[in-house]
Image (cartoon, rainbow, N blue to C red; front, side, top):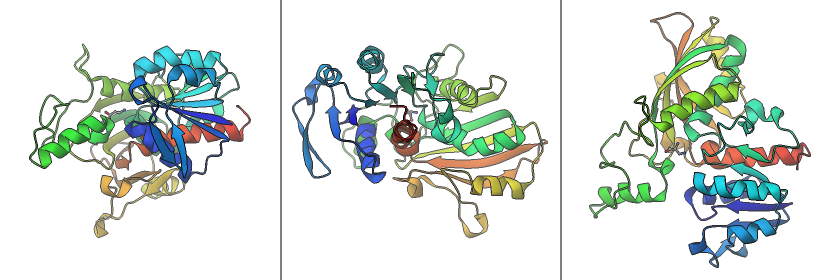
Length: 329
Ligand code: 2RA
């Protein structure tokens, strides 16, 4: 097993390396790949020194799996070249997610759709992954009719430069502006670029990706995505209407045993999911479960996950592990 991590020096790339080590993902050779300006740099990982290589060299090394986290442009240009060389690409960018010929995979939900000829596999957007993972066991039982979601997203979702902007503001230094406004002590109802319909690209990702992952275009989704000055993970207020009615005890039971989900729902004792606690965890945390008393068959829930973990690195490494375990590589 020759494994390449493309974009190894970025926030998600470093998280991928951490998850590979934590999950004890087995490989014989590891290629750390980054843009030209990082080529030649040395990184010590698991006690071994690695030299960063460029994309050209990485393709010629014909890795078995390449986990990409290098932005949409790089993925569009390079994923097909790796695929042609026989590599399976697991891509964290938005480049291939809505391509009908590519699978959009959250392993607990739809890894079983993967086949030997899937050469480019898309990792969904972070805010989508945590929401659909929390909803999947309920969807199976009651059938989702409509989702209304509002997000509270960590600055780590934008990348290192955004973390630097927030910390500079917090520490009274001159910030390099990544966002159009200050982020510390502020809330920006604006993630990614605005589209003609008034929604942001992040909001449209949540809408379109949810339908694709559940394989159901009839699921109605509306989203408001918001950036807040925190770092540990994304939080989401999810209002979900089902086709069938539910019992709260059964909802708790289903979520309590869902793979990858941890129920934290004891409000009387101030127990509910928070990004501070989700930080560096692989699971999706769910709490504040309550019936929406304003209309039938509708539930309110609060969903939190580390966006760099299950929202990116963990999901990608789980896909790689699935491919290995099912002899798809
Ligand atoms: C964000 N969803 O948080 C993005 C990262 N993929 O901005």
